[in-house]
Length: 150
Image (cartoon, rainbow, N blue to C red; front, top):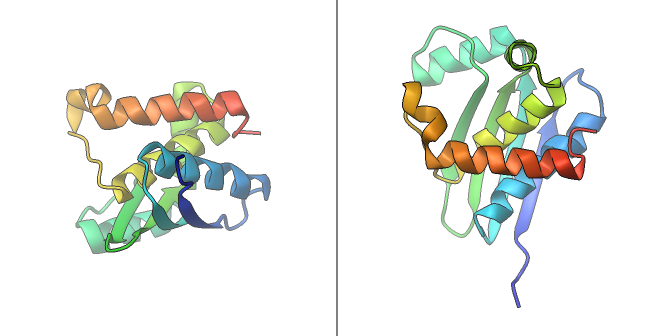
């Protein structure tokens, strides 16, 4: 018998719609459960371009906005991490890809959580063929089929 993962998720959406809290929480839980992680605590916050650019510059040395920044804070008895989602960048990416904003936020929440869980991907053209990207997209398809974007 498989033991269920113990997952704690905190979501801070700023002025986003309240329904996004449950949607993002489901995305984080799905990513943690896909990795059979026994325990995790993940905090997710939606930020605007200016805040994302400031975080990106301070912690990663890149003076530009971005869609997701993730920090893994420990893996002793449980995985702990912070994920920051760029809501304005997500909106631009959703429009460019022709997908609903909710789907793009789910994608970014899964992406950031996978980084917290230790996944990484190459930059450039190889990114979309990476195991992390393939897992991310499978989880997003499953979540959207389950109604995570509603």
